[in-house]
Length: 473
Image (cartoon, rainbow, N blue to C red; front, side, top):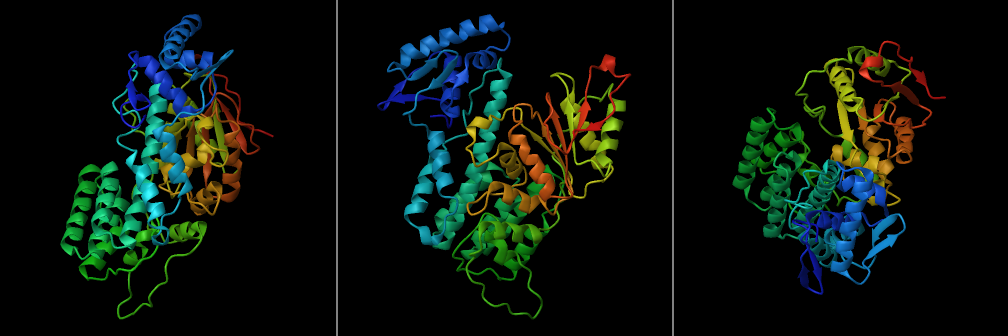
């Protein structure tokens, strides 16, 4: 079990693992489900040791686990280590069941809904909640990324279940599920709207209006912004008693569409049929009709001054504003300051208001491409999470992400791509499908894409004679 504090059971009996790093190692092998090189595991769990010392420590912990687990649970093949197939893992069950049920509708009930609910119930707490390895920053980064990815999957599933429950008139459970979704992220305005919609649909107008006030207050207190136009339009319809029952199918954002559409004065609309469009068509419709958002970046705030790279910053931002440039890769060894330079360039371009839809930063340092299936690219998954897109069946992830990006004018920053060179090939497809976006990447190696301009970053002492920017031909 990896939801909450990690724990192991054999035939229903708890197995105690006394060594903290052995438990972390077992959790990592179970979650990733692949062969790992001994050197990479040694570096991951003993970063402050020499390589030989780290390998000795790894061998000791593997021997400890082998004796504890017996039955040859560990696969030790020369320089590779893995966990043998045949074990049950709550995280795997959770992900696979929800992936097999990308939509939940009233017509699927009760079997599919109960199956999805059972998978959701496995999520007792966040991934490895309360468990840390302070001396293993890369493991902590991996843990954080996995936890956030699983939270996003849970949020999407809760939204679908709440709306499916509403579709069959299960008032109490629909509201309870929506409240759980909101508890995951109290700043999620869409989750507030879902609750407002449900309260109103079930005749609880006062509760719906209280939910709006809670939404308005938390946005003001935490972000200093007012509710979006979608939210204010919804609350006005609630006040006028314009919310109807009878929606047979609900999508993650399409669920509120009927309640959010403004009515012309004196105009009586025809009853709409149930939502039956293909997922990609639904997503495109959402994008075309979406209202402008106030927040247009997710750049981390800088708590220390930016020193010593003024020339590079100017050159980089000049290159990104050139009409011939679509993709720039900052390349250099680790520790050169590639990430900070990319973020600083993002801030400068944001201040210059050159990208109408903002500047967005995606860190990929902790992403393991092997944890994704052959269909879902980790870069596409990261973008979907960044923009709150719910990837559905019926269209490829690339098509769904492009349905969003094709109308956007923005700068996307991809940080730490050196271990995702094959997966980075999708960037060319994004550039072709979204003509108004530009990309900035950081990597220890070039991406080898036709659109790529290289920006070599050297040590601060060697910056007087810079290599001019050249496109990769």
